[in-house]
Image (cartoon, rainbow, N blue to C red; front, side):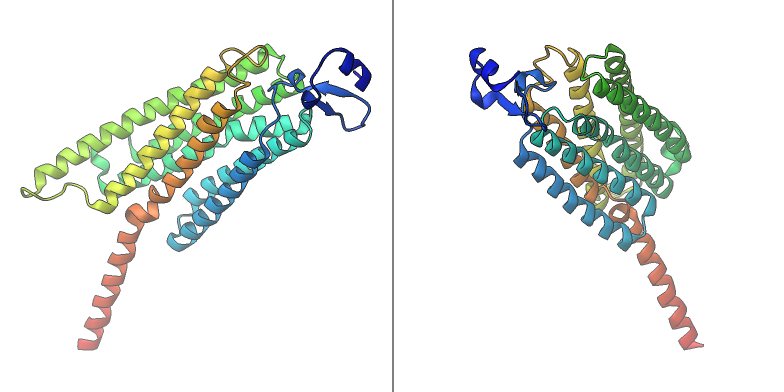
Length: 307
């Protein structure tokens, strides 16, 4: 509609936005989200993920944890690109590129963080006590990361179909829901194996200790706590996204709630990334290898001197 038609329709001026060609004005309610994404919130998330990215790169290089670092870096980059897409929607709420970018990247980025967690727990089990796990450590790679890839593909396809139809495609919605629902199931199963391993490991440690001694050192408690916090935060977020899409994109009060999106998507996933700074394999057990190697080298040097 043109400016004159909009005024005659009684649409409030603050709800009108000029299209890129400058010819037409449309109410914001005509967009999928029915709101203009917050520039301040999305710019803040881009900056925060940039800081997290640099911290994880520093720790990854320091402790040489290349696999973990790679997955977290990809996840942070996807998040930054996704929130960049929401900035594009702030500039132009009808931007197809912005909608597609944020749909695929923000929805799919947690898959990379969970992959980093799966790798870390697998290595932790191998390092601390592999016989206490009901699954072989390497099985965590093949089972859970393979499932993550399937989730990512389904969510990306669903997001692309929804974007091309401006949220009207039922097929896109169902495919995205399938990817998110599968991710919830995979996370619940992983949490069960994680909890089972920790219970068995702690019980065995306690049986070997003298009264008053701690079954797990403080550093390891923080490490496992960081992993557990990250996976629980991601699980809550995935449950929210499944619930958000349960009403579809059209005529949904959940999809159009920006505050809920910022809190249960943006904040939760960023806190999970920060938790992984503590749930870092270098922090949890890599330092032990460094200490043991330095001690062995010292002993070797002393023996050479004595000879």
